[in-house]
Image 1 (cartoon, one colour):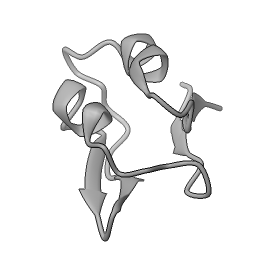
Image 2: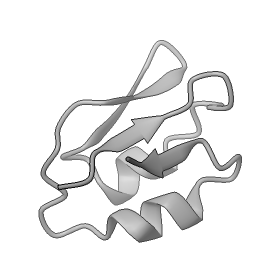
Image 3: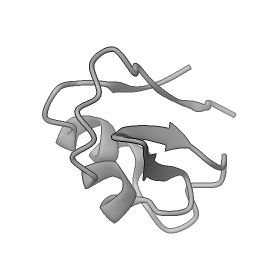
Length: 59
């Protein structure tokens, strides 16, 4: 199963990922962090595509 990854050097902490997928992402200290692996009902590809600075990927 692919895992979400946040490039903290690119992340601007806008919170889009957390809004779209709160089971996986949380903004803390001005940067997004991966807090879980289960996307549940969210679409991880939508999260990747919605990041304004392309800081999110799956590995």
